[in-house]
Image (cartoon, rainbow, N blue to C red; front, side, top):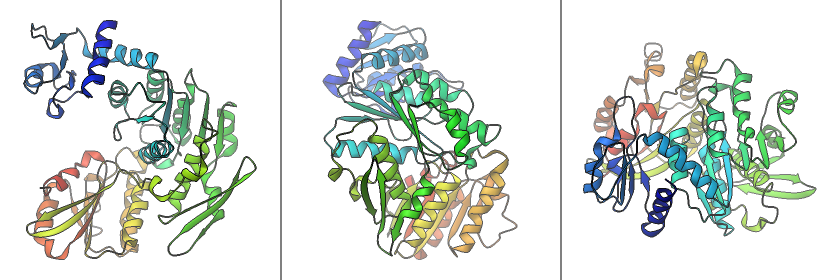
Length: 432
C-alpha cells in the first residue's frame, strides 16, 4: 500500500491532480475515490470517472481496467493515506476552530503568510468535518512550510477525532459563543470540547480568544496556550466615519492597526497577529497588515442578470450563526448602495435557544427598517403570523418567483443562511 500512496503523490505532482469524491467535479488527470454513504456508494460511478479521464480511480469494485485500483474499504484507505501524508510532511500544521470566523481567520492567516513569501497550504473552503478534513489532507502540498486547516464540531467527541487525525503543531480558538450550544449540554460543555483542540500530541503552542469567565478558562489550559479577551481590545479602538484604528502593546512593543472595514476586522487582525507571532517571531510587521490582507469573509459578490436587468448578489449562503448573521446584516445595511434586498436563511444547531436567536434577527430587521426582506426556513417560518410585514417561506424555491416579480425594485441582494437552506441555488438560478 505504501507504493500506492507514493504513486498518488507522484500523480499529484506531475499533473497537479486533485483528489475528489464526486465524479461531477472530476477534471482530466484528477484522482477519484468512491465513498460509500448510507444512501449511495460512490464506487458505482467508476465508469463515469474513467470516461472523464481520471488518472486513477480508487473504488471497492474489482475491475481489470488499468486506471482502477480496488480496495476493500475506501474509508479505511483514506484514513491510512491521510496518516501517510501527515507522517511524510516536514512542515508545520496549523488548526483553527471557534464558534464564528473559522474560515475568515484561516484565509486571513494564509494571506498574511503568503504576503510574507512563506509557502502555505490551506484547507478547502469551509470543509471542516472529518470527511472535509480528510479531503483537504489528501490534497495537501507536501512542499509547503505551513498548512492551515479549520476544524468544526457539532457534537461531543468530534474534536478529539479531528485532532487525532490531524495532530496540529499550532492551534487557535477564534472565540466561543453561547449561541452555538446545539448538541452540547451547556456553554461550559461546549467550551470544554472546543479546547480539546489542544490535546494534539504535537502541540507546540496555542492561543484562545475567550470573552467569558477568565478563571474557568485558565484552569483548563496548560502553559503552552495563551488566552486573550478581544472584548478588552475595543476600548482601545479609535474610529471616525471612514477608518477604525487600534493601538495595543505586545511583548513590550507598541503596534497600531487600522482598517476601513470596521472593528470586527481589526479584532481579526490583532488575533491573527498575536497567533502568528507565536510561531514566526521574525515576520516583517510592515508586510503584516494592510487592507488587502484582511479577508472580509468567504462571502463573494456575484454580478449577473435577472431578465434584462443587471443585479449583484452578495453571497454568504454557506453558513450563518447569530453573531455572523447579525454583523453581516449591519455591514450590508450601512453600505452606500441602492435598491437593496435581503434573503436570510434560518440558522441550524442552536438547540433550545433557536427561537430566541431567530427572533433577534427579525427584531434587528425591524430596528434597521429593512423593507425588502425574505426569511427562509422552518425556524423563521414559525414567526410568519406575528410579523406579517415580512415575507416568510419554508424553502428557497418561492424566493425565485419573488425576485422575478420584484426585479424592477431590486439591484443588490444580500444572501446569507445555513448551508442546509440551499440558498446558493437561488444565485445559481441566475448565473450565466
